[in-house]
Image (tube, rainbow, N blue to C red):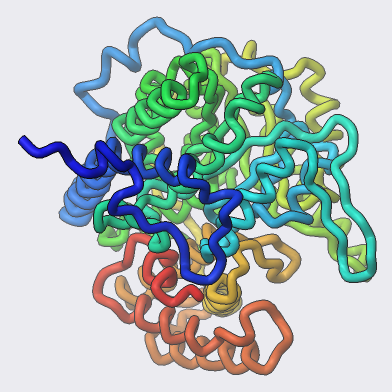
Length: 532
């Protein structure tokens, strides 16, 4: 039998790049070979799991409801715990998130947060330049050489006691079209993870800093087990002890909430905790029930964490994590400072304090913020109510959550302003994303892809499961949607806001997705085809 050429030359059949910038310091032959090895070993399983997602959604569309798995009851009922948590991650009371842009990395590391989650996923638009510059920026952050000089000559450097660095690669579903192996496109997740691990894992391990990862968009224990296999293989190839790489998993899909024990178990040698990725979780609820007219949600602003199905989700996450010795991380505060309007700013900060108070008193071990100015606000709440480094002792034995509680629809209304806001936010974010921006300030909130996804999914459901009435009893219809979309596209096109140059492209894409007979799984997949 012939020996595959890739076994002799691991770079045979491999193409990385966009033909403009070689990024030779990141895309070294050994680094490319490492990523190609990950692809050849694991991509078949990834594609199989994505096919299982599709089949699962088809069952939901046919009327099946998500539920706890019968075949894994022994895991849920078993007496086991996750492995030890490293000292660097024992106190995660406030974490800041943001894209892998150079200045943002420095500011986040200097923010006073305990952890910085550097994001290749929902707050980054995956242009090849963004992804490769991000890898370069993170390498420089790890080796201590990162700095940035702005147009006025101000120099930014990382100070003493920076936040602990955690990386979020892209989800399993996202491709990286600039990387091909044996004629197949490589998963964005393997590009992001592989290049970062190859260049930084040894240095981070030597300093007892991991490497550490946030894993997004998982839907099942099998998808978590794939990450376990990827990390185990990477550790072997890079000469690291098993379990050196640590993971925190975002529970941000409805199917995953029914498998939290199983996900912890699949990653039990390396998992540190689970996170309430609440915005994507709301989107996943909408997407999972896209064919269920009886499970529509009210407008986005009314779907808060006090809504019963979200409260049940967050409390079950705390109980599950603490039972297994893992951390239960709270969700994102997306507010940003409102300059020039003290009353509005004070109201926004009051919302942040109330949200963080809810989280810490419920038993969460930490929380997320999107802006450095929110770090001291959230920190003060957690310092006051969580004097210890975490709350693993808060077992929440009082929590009992049923399947029906986790999928109960919320009660509320749809107002004209709520409808219009969904159209505006979806358009503005998508247009900015097409310009290469994945983290966009809109109406004093720092938005990433999750908010645009909620807005898009809600618009599709309201229009396809009609007639839906506004609170004033007028009907929502496609004529109203088309009119609103055209008006917002005109305003954006004439503005100096992010996305102005791609307003028409974004409007055409959103119109096509909203008018389509089936709700697409992700906005970022068709949008990726139009990304420069």
